[in-house]
Image (cartoon, rainbow, N blue to C red):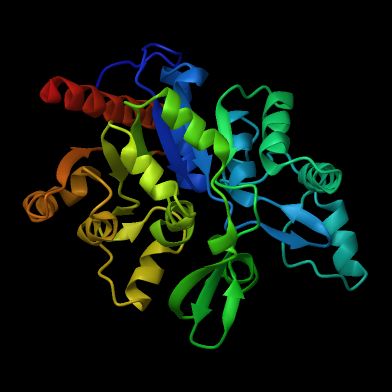
Amino acid sequence: YGYVPLTNVRSHSNGLCVLSGGVGGAKLVVGLSKVLKSTEFLVVVNTGDDFHHLGLKICPDIDTVTYTLADLVDQERGWGLKDETWNFLNNLKGLGGDGWFNLGDKDLATHVERTQRLARGDTLTSVTKAFASSLGVSSMIVPMTNDPVSTIVETSEEHLAFQHYFVRDRCLPEVKGFHFHGIGAAKSNPLISEYCEGNNNAAIVLAPSNPFVSIDPILGVPGLKDRLLSVKGPKIAISPIINGGAVKGPAAKMMEELGIPSTAMAIANHYKGFIDALVIDHSDSKLFEEIEDTGIKVFITNTVMRTLENKVVLANECLNYIDQFWEDKW
């Protein structure tokens, strides 16, 4: 691919709306932030993972995206802050407290301040914007809704809030399905509609996040899916499944337990009716014709984002595909 300068090097005036979960989505967003101006793309982040713990409002995906863009994220874990200490958590456990969710000392400040601001009447959108600005992040990060939505994992034993399934129970229970508590009453973040109105030719990109618990909650907010479909740009998903597995997270395990093949083909079927194209890794190139037979275009490139250059190259490849879409259209 050649050398890619790690700076804003191109313009994308039609606009770009990225739907993102946590770790995988954050990697793509970082790549985009290196090649686009912050005003040229909007990041809509899943809030179905949000929950209250120890009286605090925790927003895992929003924080992961923000910390990653601020270059403050713990690279090894993919979440939380680097150079973290754990005095609070260790003392809490020593007192017999509920210490299954890892709250670092520095990260704790985020949750305390967010909880206080929300209690004063601030919206999650305004708090997210303020925190991003404080950390030097200029990218537009917006929660999918300001209203409470909770992803519930239906297991063979019980229904679990997502963080209880994911962190406390380490994804061990067998998954039977999902539902999103509160989503019927949730209102789409007005900034998303505002962005779509101002960028009617915007492309929509589904980040390589878990389709069931990161992207589906966003698309499930009443009216949001139709609003995104109404913009004229291409709708593109990047498969989070590579060569039958997930780079990180329980997506592949969930698919197997739901009786869904853990393949990029299954991702295409899951998003069929919304996306125009699916970006898959070279290791899945054998699925090219099978996916295209569904009416979904296939774009093959390297989708594993281990380095910053990987992230920048994938971001550029997606933008090249979008540019080609407009060239072919006109």
